[in-house]
Length: 240
Image (cartoon, rainbow, N blue to C red; front, side):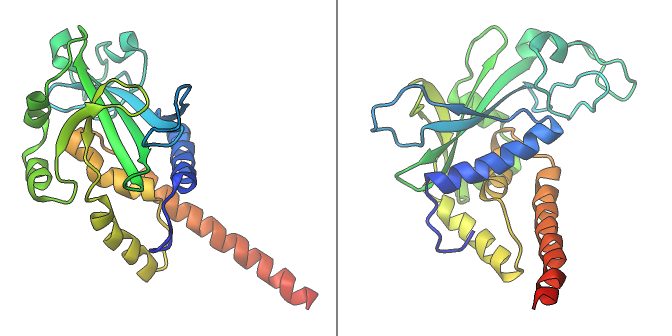
């Protein structure tokens, strides 16, 4: 994306579509939901990207058979909470109060012209986590970044589409910390997916980690474009 390119709703949805395409390929369970409501006054696009996952209270993603204990899962709850069979996996029994359901939503803000991460968390009995619980669950290194870094703070407010209370990473500094990323990509002449780069920086602060394959996918896509260009060039020369 060009440094001065307007990051509008169409651009946002384009990057989300590319992100979800790779998510479906690796089974990371992100999806796009279209809003069925709206009066034209919402501070977001007519849809949003979302994902639900279950994590152990200390931040480790719930595992299932045949996967590492740190691999995120989007299986039905009954399967997700089955005890692992492999020796390298977690073997301790998991109680309901130790597992937290996280629901992440990525929306577009018309006011800030950037993506915004909304999320909510609850125990399996349905009781929601309070803001202080969210802060306590953030790793110390990210607490420092949240206090002094570019994404500023976690607050609680109404979801622009659903009208329900969600936590949100305030977007006021997003342009500030994303600009160097975009400038660097231009400097080395490398394409980046804005959503991938942004989410890889803000997500870990609230327990959302992206697999490295998202970054590799961007490089592979760039390589495919280069190979397509090079395969077309000889034909063009022959036609001349």
